[in-house]
View 1 (cartoon, rainbow, N blue to C red):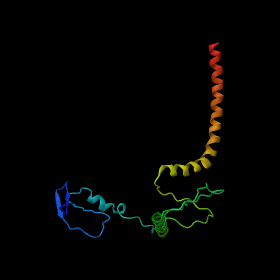
View 2: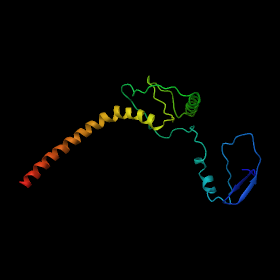
View 3: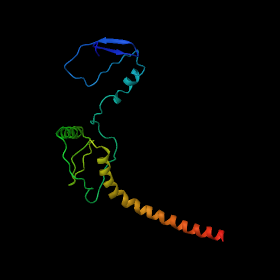
View 4: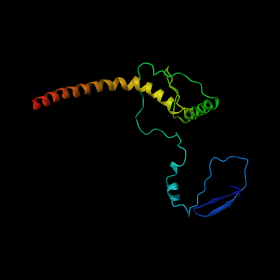
Length: 165
């Protein structure tokens, strides 16, 4: 960038430029002759444009989960002001697009954001959820399977002892 130019190593095209006081979010250049995927991008342009939730739903399926009892407890933690603003703006954007809607539940769900310690916080939340929901279901199934396994093991030992004697 010391020569204030952009160079494409594939096509050996160089363009001179000037520095700007504005920051760019992305740089993109499409050369129809050099890019063999241009016709595919034009044919399926909906994959490169943001999805708009303005279309009417074409099915009768509704997603609704009735839960019983209070949710797994998660201690509230304050977010840093920049993360709070980011989360609030994202929720408002999803609300405006119709992706989410206000809930009628008296309970709230925890907001999961990437933290500095990362995995430790993530695992502590999902471990409590796992222990409260899945453990009660799978322990009964596991106990039922273990009962059959122990029964077969006991009969197997009897059969082995008969063959050995």
